Image 1: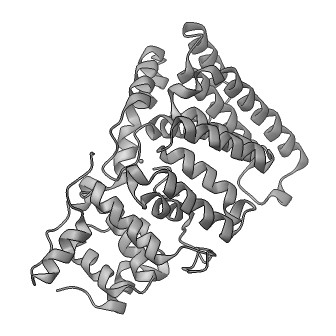
Image 2: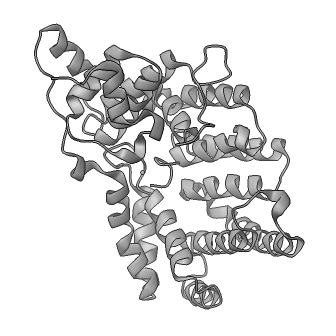
Length: 347
């Protein structure tokens, strides 16, 4: 998920509308901001550093303040992703990078002693146990995982589940609790009905939270035992829930998360078995209206437009992007130079 791991206001007009107007008048669309200033991978990598430093320095008061600020923040990154993602990204990265699995519990207990009713600590501990569980399991196919690795995985995931449940009374103070719970239920093999009930509770409290919808989308993904038809139906349902905030943008975001630089990227379809280009295009247009300075979103929109063989949309976006290109958002077989060869590079 290049847009899930890596996250101001609405705008009067989006890139595509400006491009259409300028194109009709025979004028060149105004360029978007330069690539370096809008590279979300770089932005998020820099944004997590203060939280990682707070953990490393055992500044639990600072972590508490950062968490509360991020949970209560209505502002988003320039691409529309919520800033609460920084907290999860920072600690997950730190846990895996330093690999001090025996030392982390001592600091987590120290933090809990200082702040016994802390949701920030509870979610950090949940993330620790989940990351430690996946360290034991590894990322390979399930049938290749040794029995002993599965035992450790389930034991540690049970610890994550227990810590989440202990903090349930505080769950509606931050959407991250809900997205972590959905992930935990799915990864521990909970019945679909149980996960769907958790999702229903989550959207009742935080209907517009991106991470909640993105985690639930995994449940319906063919890669996690769902089907293409189930995924598309869910993407439409999530878009309907979030329409007042993002228009059809959630439909585009969820398929962006499902996309990959691989042969299993979902092909376009109009029968509910894959992304429908008409709906996805409307979703990206809505995102660009709300986040007009995001060259990150515009890159992915152009990448999908090329694959959908939508020459007009591709060329409008390509002209506006100019040199603001993020190779990571373009599949190898549909890189920008391939798409330029297909449609012709704008002058």
